[in-house]
Image (cartoon, chains in turn blue, purple):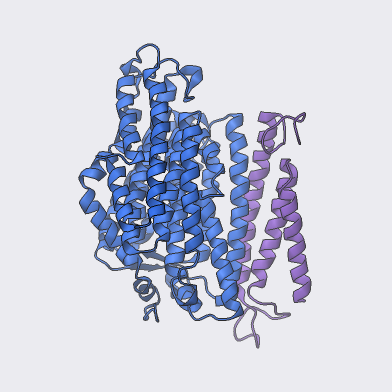
Length: 496
Length: 111
């Protein structure tokens, strides 16, 4: 079973290549291949979670090259949790996409699989340069997916997205060059040991490398001042793609947690980037809630809600205590799944409204207005953090773990502003609508996929305690980087 | 040697940043290309500069570091693919929006 660790990369890689090879228009075959590959990720992720939950850190040395020299994949609890979240989000998104959205452009299924490969790889790798490579894999697939379907708005938003990320990649390479130049290693565990022994000039170079990486991950995570690309790109992307992209900002957050929590965890650089992250996260939180209020389309509203969740999460991360990290992970699961569900819901709503699509203007009622209204209500309550759904549990856990009055104020005020924005959106779309949307015009599988994602809100609240406890266990392991280093290098992690 | 490389990297990155900040997609693409050249050189140099040494232990007295060479090769391949993609995207933007302004503004508006 030791080879199971690489399965989350290999399954989508093979499926993606098969799907790209298939040149003839056999959409049915493509859908089945894509769905089977995505379905297969669920048991694999579950198996890996059980493997990691025992507390052992799985290390997979590619080509059997010894750890600091070869590339390693490392499976700890944090990676396993993120893999599971990806698998759970991807399946409904793909089911939704398989109902017709995949016909609006070429190679939707192939790109979807390659995107999953990049995401899973970024969560598993224990090597900084390999992290860069997986970032590029997921980015180039995401460029294709973001532009899937046609339209000037999509291309315009797409250019910004691609150019910004190319600059991000260039900065990442500079950071890697600095990191390698000062320590002579790119293996995260080895790097952590070497960095803690640096002094003088090299120390400043390493600090620079760390802060540059922070900029790159901040761009991926859509942190102020680097989040402006997100609303245009996500709101213009096809719904299943936007739903999958809900995990992409979390890749950035994961990378921050991994690199600052492990690679820069010891020596004089411990706590690097903490204060700037804290301040930027709070600013992101406030500006995104203003964005929710000002948005003119439902897609924009959800995109800003996603940015808001990023602010909430990064602030929790910057507090750097195991409790805050645990609560942050719970909120991360909740916000990813619920925002993904809301992107799908926004598309369902816009389908029945003709020309108006998801613009927030009174018009014809969406098909199945009653049912969609209830779903919107569930999603909205959960995402602003009102009881009794998962957002509330997450926010309470975060506020208990982060006893900073400023954070409480911003979190609550942000939630209030978002609530005003969402109630305006909901009442315009569902109450001030003319006619009575016909429930039968809703597509069954599309509805099922949306319900599946939004149903995680009550589910995460009902099973709140075990999930939160699991998240705290993940955070407990994350806060002891020595364990990770020992597992990878097979030696004591020095002073860490 | 070090000074010359440093000046070269600085020039490449500086011109790259300047061009990337232009409002038309063509200069932006050129800028990103220059930027990635500069960055690739930087990564290459991170293994320290050594003249006339092979990257094989045992053959040379002080072998040059092979890892940055491998890294830079990967970075070049990725950068090339990304640039190609961006060119295609810019052409499509030109076709769909009738303008190569990065915000899709028409030529009459502020350029």
